[in-house]
Length: 206
Image (cartoon, rainbow, N blue to C red):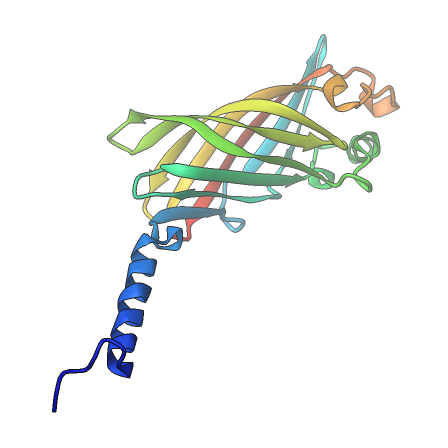
């Protein structure tokens, strides 16, 4: 029995197998990467806003945050990184029921129930190798009250076994998002500039 010819079924199958293996190796789908999701069951997840004016400071907090960070490549945040986080605005608790209701009215949470931040990690540097901590600068679009604005948000990422902790702080101006400083009874004085602090955990999906 002679060897299979170039056009034989066996050779065709071998060529197809080689082509398929090469495709898998070269395909972007084969590139290693990472994907972390917000661990919504973790204790300590918190988004907090603070309004400070003379003689009056109040805060609102919620743990209703969701989202993910994704990137391609073998190293952390290597290439094509993406991040997407959203917060349920109606869930903020300021400690006073009427103020909470007034706040939901001012933010029009029935029409725009969430604040959404979508962007990328523009820079990351190792700040503490003993605990695998990174300082990051993110750039993206913050969508709030029907307005999209480009923002930069600095923060830190501490990588732990199977999860990571994210912390960030930044400020927003109500006028930038067409939000009028409330004049309702529970909001007699509200700062035009609101401080935002976030702290939450991400579980490692891959």
